[in-house]
Length: 294
Ligand SMILES: Cc1cc2nc3c(=O)[nH]c(=O)nc-3n(C[C@H](O)[C@H](O)[C@H](O)COP(=O)(O)OP(=O)(O)OC[C@H]3O[C@@H](n4cnc5c(N)ncnc54)[C@H](O)[C@@H]3O)c2cc1C
Image (tube, rainbow, N blue to C red; front, side, top):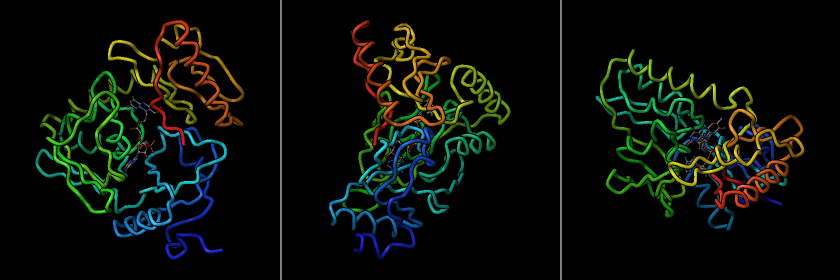
């Protein structure tokens, strides 16, 4: 039987393994998987998915996604093509495609003597994922540097969302259109050496405190408030090092779960449950997932 995306077989596959595209490296396949090369490709598959009533999920760097063991019935769209990976610098403005890795954007800005984005040093993933979830840490978040964002709206038209129309609060943005295409960042001039020095400092601290050695890991929960850290609550609940199957609460930073070889998504979900229950019982905080579960 023909599948709904048959005519797009040049860039759409069926039953496609997602584990290698996520940082956890676990979980099942996508019923349909598209890697569009242009906005036209993208628009065509999104339109077909809407006609066939197939849900769509956008995948960036897969650093904030856990795919269930049974996989997903959705069409997963991965914008991992050079078309969505352009970076252009003009004066103090950088424009970057949604698929640009955050690390590449930060180092290009630093080399050009443009300061601001270095506060995001050490956060993995792409520009698209970072904008969706207002990626950031104690040093700052991506939101304040955004001058405008190009999106594909639910009618599959390209729209420009300007600064005044955007809101970035905690680990959330109001970018609720189906696709983020690119963004403009407004930065400030500074000596490249000074920016690189700050990047190095932030990287040293991050590397010491987070489980970067393990590729198969993920950040779990949002902080309940700016002064209360989810990691500290999990640590105080005595859960560091707790293991279920192949999943373990990191002993370096309790808000990370490590997926050891052979781990199942089910193991991670079990630990998430256990953490939420224990923190609720001991401290009365309902930890909300930052991780997207597909
Ligand atoms: C080791 C490690 C450290 C981390 N440290 C931090 C940290 O310090 N601060 C922090 O905020 N986060 C952190 N994270 C979480 C994660 O890196 C960020 O949330 C990151 O911004 C996600 O980007 P991504 O491209 O990987 O998105 P994905 O994980 O691929 O997707 C995340 C969400 O964004 C959506 N999305 C992705 N691309 C697009 C697009 N083009 N259009 C529309 N929607 C899109 C997806 O549908 C999904 O809902 C960490 C994760 C790990 C594994």
